Image (cartoon, rainbow, N blue to C red):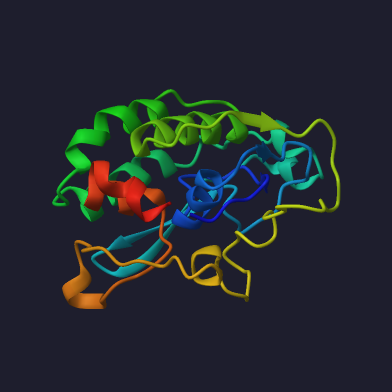
Amino acid sequence: MIRFGQSVLTTAYFPPVEYFFAIAGSGKVLIEQYEVYQKQSYRNRCYICSAAGREALSIPVRKESYQKVPIRDVRIEYRKPWLQHHKRAILSAYNSSPFFEYYMDDLFPILDRKETFLFDLNLLLLEKCLELTGIKVEIEFTSEYHKEYSEGDFRTIIQPKYRGENLLARYKKEKTWTQVFSDRFGFIGNLSILDLLSNEGPNAISYLL
């Protein structure tokens, strides 16, 4: 098992598998709460495998989020019908998977709470997904912003725009599992943890260690 002394991570919406790989191998997990919001990142976006292939689901945020407010204070925009769209897309993608029905009642009520702040929604989803995967870890939060850390700084690495190898590839821990639409697209790696949980259920943790 790969071990990190610590992992410093951004907040993330239904984070990708590599995010949970970093957490599972860490002695300490720090979630950044004082950086400024960045568009087109995992902070408000996840990727699932739908009937059309890899699909992005993004949470819209309020306009003031672009004024360099701390990520902790970024508010979700509910005037757009993103919540209904996300739930329909997730259902369509994973309703026929082996384990999704067991997890839907744990995850959808969190979305339905309509949290005001993106950070709070992401944290609730992260805590529930950690519980469902069986990863036991204490989450801590940054007390101020640091441009870089000397150890385990994955804030820029675990991002959709990162051009290098993802953490799973870097540490030769990439594994495949049967996906709902693998007959059409083959295996699509490093999707949201939703994909791994829905298809592997209690066995998901074995892909993260």
